[in-house]
Length: 132
Image (cartoon, rainbow, N blue to C red):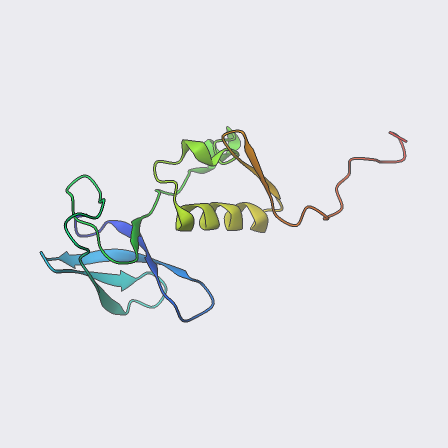
């Protein structure tokens, strides 16, 4: 993870468990991150060498790579319908994608053959008077 890379950092306190952050600096023992929302800087320790990591073999406690945001053209093509196309598919990526789609009124999201439904009891125009 190079400086400037967007990542999700786990935070036990607060409303959101995963905070979008940016890598500021990385050493052999820790990584320094800057929160995207308020700019505060914090650090996370490096995990043991036998833990699985990203391409360079360095993994840090509670830190996951963030996916690049989809463009409007990619959303128009429906690339946000199936999370299996995301480069990184882990807890914060799933939570972020489902939250983004929910805020746009899209309550169904695919992950390969699995359908994730958020608020499935929302009224949908499936059975209009014309159809009945």
